[in-house]
Image (cartoon, rainbow, N blue to C red):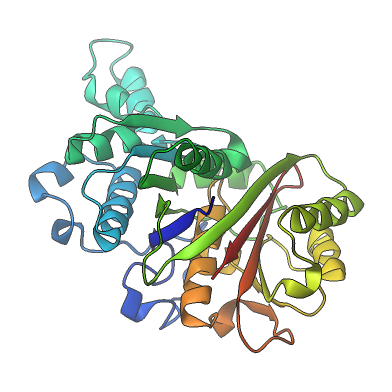
Length: 332
């Protein structure tokens, strides 16, 4: 059974929400992390509701509503969201209120909105959707788990599954990371991406052929697992036209392991756009879909040009600090 991605939407630290401006006019950023370039939300979300929403909720809701609109879906068969830290801004606010009130009487709003499933819940409330509503919180595999659940639901007979990944960064979290002197990441970031999975294709559909998530792999094991993943989908390394990777440093040993298996494919690093965060890989899939539909990848992201003239099969590979690894396969 084939699974199709019928629409996508992404908010990242570069222009990615507006399809006409997609990765054009590369924005330079200063500061402790890459801040998302957010759209004018009042054009997408009822302004009366906006004032109660934190940034991650706005990003998650805006990308989800846009993806559903582009797919022509009013009511999804399920809403599945992956997030690493959830609504960290509201969590900070709630904890700060506890301190400043000396553990007195608090407004419940910040607590209610600080839970990890708030994004998925807000989307359901806005749509009036009573179907299954899940949030996956699993560090660097949060989005992959949500995506795999979406695939399973399509295979079980559901249709039009909304899958999203979202995380936000705050000045406080950035300051904590800086104080930890954590040098494995060049730059942190934030963003949200949403997808509509369906059993039937449309004119602008891309097939999601497979997703695999693994933990604690050596470089040699990444090569072995990659070959097995391709074999499972009846492909060889020569069939891959481009690899969308997510690495923090481009002398990364895992990146070299992937290059050795697939030496002729174009290679692009999506974390040049997103920076690092738990669900950054969601944008890797969005970039892969866009590359297949437009037959191009922004030169700002290219690591290797490769030897292929067109894109038919794209591999998405991400690892989070060498602990969480994942492979995804997109085809047209």
